[in-house]
Length: 115
Image 1 (tube, rainbow, N blue to C red):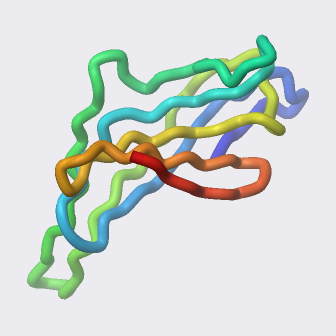
Image 2 (cartoon, rainbow, N blue to C red; image 1 turned 180 degrees about the vertical axis):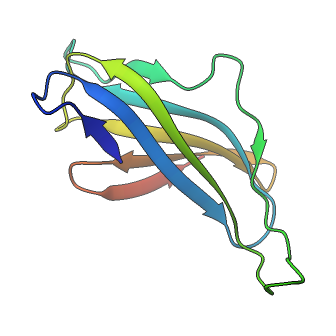
Image 3 (spheres, helix red, strand yellow; image 1 turned 90 degrees about the horizontal axis):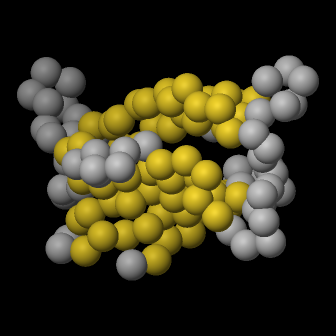
């Protein structure tokens, strides 16, 4: 989710929840891109300069019988100006020996990935 101020002056939060139902996965980084400042898709915010390396691999829980594990995070940001029409949130996830880039477009709610 992307949240902005009531006056729509700037983006003030980026919130996400990701989960892994099976196997191993590591969240490497999260980035926000848009075209508000130029004609090309530019990086406007990065969660970590050094990388997150958050392990959200599936784990089996004996008590409730589930193996779903998730990461929930709310980031307070100040991105001004912003363009919701061209906004993209990119998640870099390492699994199966590769780093996958999962891209979410908030306006259309489309999700796609590449490696």
